[in-house]
Amino acid sequence: MTDPVTLTGDEGTIGEFDEKRAQAAVRELLIAVGEDPDREGLLETPARVARAYKEIFAGLYQKPEEVLTTTFDLGHDEMVLVKDIEVMSNCEHHLVPFHGVAHVGYIPSTDGKITGLSKLARLVDVYARRPQVQERLTTQIADSLMEILEPRGVIVVVECEHMCMTMRGVRKPGAKTITSAVRGQLRDPATRNEAMSLIMAR
Ligand SMILES: Nc1nc2c(ncn2[C@@H]2O[C@H](COP(=O)(O)OP(=O)(O)OP(=O)(O)O)[C@@H](O)[C@H]2O)c(=O)[nH]1
Ligand SMILES: [Zn+2]
Image 1 (tube, rainbow, N blue to C red):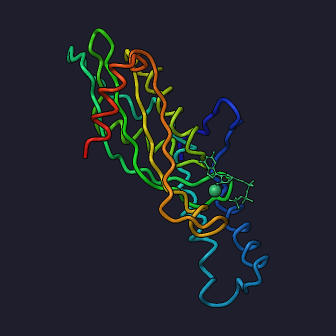
Image 2: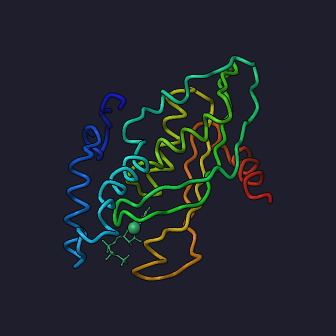
């Protein structure tokens, strides 16, 4: 277990994952829905669900700067864009999944500081593996890239389908939510349009 991370903003301070407490909570929930947690098929369920939650919320215990450690000074100063990074997250309102893709692009700093391509996908995971809303996920990716890589601009576009809108509630399978965050030089209309046309090209 890594050190507990202090998060800023409305997330407050997050402690460590409490496996025993998670197991007890799952057992309580099973009783609350009218199940018998002592029937054979459910005996291991609290332990399994606790382990699963530890995994899907692992981003709560990771710092974005830990995944963006590998940087290279290549002198490359044109846009870098990684498309279709799979997003698997959970909405903080219902704790059910939302999933889709993220497109992450940036224009490196003038000295050409870039990071490994896989690190952009790792960064998406750090923020996706937390109780989330799609808007915050999008801006957190953009803001942490700006802070850590100090690029001249960043664009993040996230497209997701929310299970809380498909398996329950309004029940609209197929509806997609698209959010974007644009920073620095990518706010310039021509540069932004270039990035958006690369993102939209199939
Ligand atoms: N803005 C935003 N809303 C989200 C996200 N994920 C889920 N929601 C919405 O959060 C809202 C919560 O609304 P509430 O009225 O408090 O909850 P509810 O009664 O379960 O709402 P319904 O889903 O309409 O049945 C719903 O409209 C969800 O669609 C997200 O990532 N961003
Ligand atoms: Zn939801």
